[in-house]
Image (cartoon, rainbow, N blue to C red; front, top):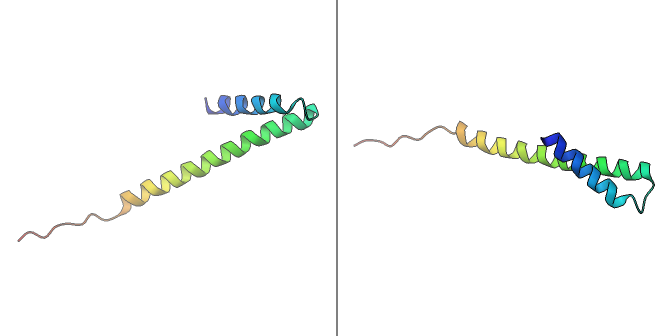
Length: 66
């Protein structure tokens, strides 16, 4: 599903640029746009995973009884 979304974004971007650019340039820009979105999602995922791992690796503090 993720690849289908990226292809749809690339196609949409290509169609938007097709009137002002040559076909080959519009296709390149479309795929470049989709690649930037994919890279941003990878970075976001890495940040989320790092945040979640940091929270789970903290030692639990125990309260003293008495």
